[in-house]
Amino acid sequence: MRSPPDARESRDDPAKRRAAHRGPRQLDGPGRWAEQALCVQADPDAWFPHKGQRDLGAIATRICGHCPVPAQCLDYALSGADSWGGIATGVWGGTTPQERDRLRRQRKPLAA
View 1 (cartoon, rainbow, N blue to C red):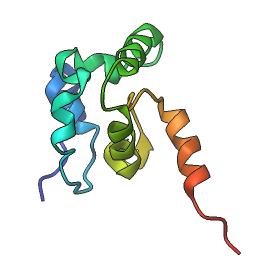
View 2 (tube, rainbow, N blue to C red; view 1 turned 180 degrees about the horizontal axis):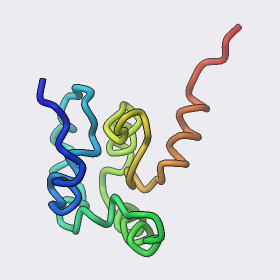
View 3 (cartoon, rainbow, N blue to C red; view 1 turned 90 degrees about the vertical axis):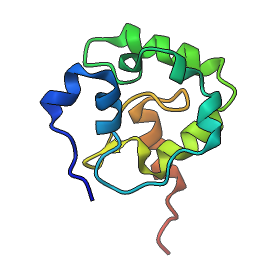
């Protein structure tokens, strides 16, 4: 298994940056639906804004609103594709990390 890329290297290269956010966990690729996703046509930095860059996150969310595959993207994110070191990152399926964390808590079965 490949080791995760150095965070300093991936910060300057958008393609490496997006790949770095997937984390070390082995996931299947997103599937053919990803070819239809509008995010592949836009700047990857919009999907992983730094603190204080709310405008970039808002742009990503707006683009997701017009995307034909947001449900598939969100499902892929909730499977772990959005996490790096156990921390959810980026905009996936039109949702923020906080929104996905809330969805994950709601999906967990309650202990009897």
